[in-house]
Length: 358
Image (cartoon, rainbow, N blue to C red; front, side, top):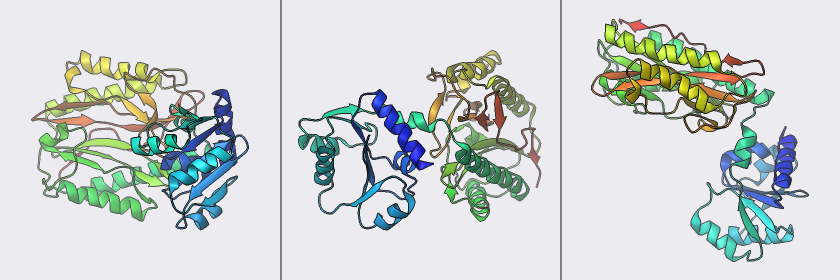
């Protein structure tokens, strides 16, 4: 697996006429190498693959990486990196412009006057968009754990509980059932707070008549899941049902069109146009979705900025929403695998209106 990814990276570097790449981001390094730790670096050329770390991680790196020579640096990191870059006869070096500090960049450049630094421009992130069979299985498992957690939490919730209590129970359940952690801090918002698309759980108690939006996911074998369901505490009002059904219709209309060669921009427009037609266009401010994998937010872009076409074996979200200040809001999110013939929904949780009267 890891040798294949290393070879793909080398092919991309060759296409871009780069002699090598310095990779600093944890996710990209781990994707290429199979390493699961942090604070380490890789230098890749057509002939060499160096894994550069310190004594904390050398044993782990030797056990986990395939096709890499593990080097234990001591002293100044920039000095060590520059020496190896020079030894590799690199003239044109690709670097991750989104993961390097200005100070580190300037210090490294000062030691490599004769080397041209070139932005990788999300080269590895582009490679990561297409999931292999093992990645898909891990994401499916993460999604399954989240589905089970939703089934559990719907039975667990009672009027008077706090948002934080619900969030803690979700996390506890997912970890008990195989998750190593949360994909992101769970978004648990109720009542009028449901108008906050990224609100965090508070001590607010769940009350009769509340919206309750649960946006959460977990990590399994290094891969994330992501789903959102909005439920109702007590009987939903007519207006609450109206908003919910509009969001559900937008979610389902998008699902009908998910297939290879459609762009994220086109998918976003389907949901956005429908919500605008129903009179709530100003209440849907975020993009429709995003890619999911080792990171909770990754390529492809599923929004008005998503000009690239999606392809088979990408994993994306479909999450339209309506948010009304001082009233509340609804978001419904599915995790979806794009297939050669269309798509497969990985989020299995019920999307019909759920009312809790406990």
